[in-house]
Length: 211
Image 1 (cartoon, rainbow, N blue to C red):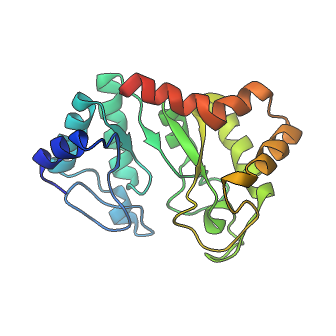
Image 2 (spheres, rainbow, N blue to C red; image 1 turned 135 degrees about the vertical axis):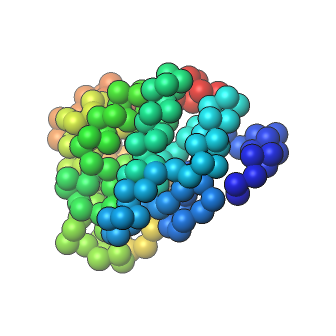
Image 3 (cartoon, one colour; image 1 turned 90 degrees about the vertical axis):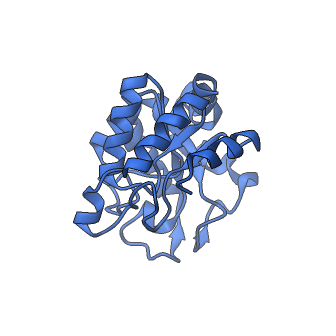
């Protein structure tokens, strides 16, 4: 993972987005964690080198799963180079206090850099009252989407879902029923333009800026 030459190979194979960490420490940095000390740790030297090279090549930096300290390092680098980055599947920590979710400050900084965050459908990211295998409720998705829009603007929202990595009872079990979320958001006050931004236009803008 930490071999910068493998980034060239990944790029040649068509990779255009890389999530820097998963649930464990790696050669680049540290994951989201309930351990405050781990959460505060930034990117390692190799991680800083990696994101510089990702920007140079035109690969999207994804901070979902990354520690808060690592997020700050990515923000500094993104501002330095004037490029956006993404949190591909994260929600609002102010509503659900899971370390995988993002604080208000993080949402604002992501938005200021022109990035996007994809709404995650995992029950325990949507509600503190839901266990890992609980119910992924549309009403909670609407609550998070409206909150994120109010903090970072409609231009920061996207769809993350995480269909291939979540457990529980899903009120939206797949893309064929995404209309349910569209209708619920529309009823909550989202405009057609804001929904278009969330569904595709925001993510397309980031890809066009980087690729």
